[in-house]
Length: 163
Image 1 (cartoon, rainbow, N blue to C red):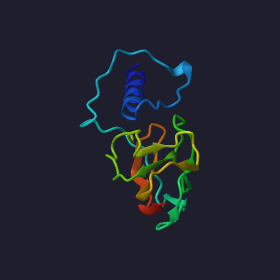
Image 2 (tube, rainbow, N blue to C red):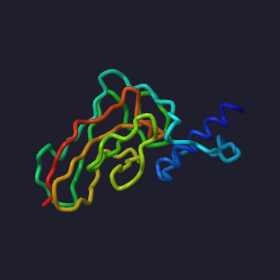
Image 3 (spheres, one colour):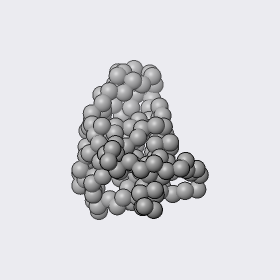
Image 4 (cartoon, rainbow, N blue to C red):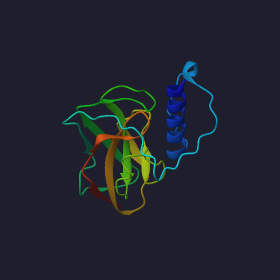
């Protein structure tokens, strides 16, 4: 029972921290619990291990590219499986694009806002609406709860110019 309560608390915390992007959970596993207060500034979450040599990268655009909006982005991953959020499997996760942002706290779920774009559906391509000007993009791969792996799997930061 304690493990079910802990799992439900972790799912609730991940949902709150990620801005309401709740991972899928089979209905037969849902357990009602009392409300949980989570101090996200101090409570590190368990992190899934990443296999040695896992790499995430942009296929497009290339660093230094001059593009127009919407910007077509394509992501690659080597050494891990690409799966939707909410599906727990070893050595797997999904993409997040950081736009004009530094890496977030790697011990917590990745925020969900205009600078931290989630691809919890397991997609590897997207179109991003970006204002004209220079922008940085970086990929961060995360597990089924949007928590970066241990060791974190992230790309080099690229810079693009939107005309």
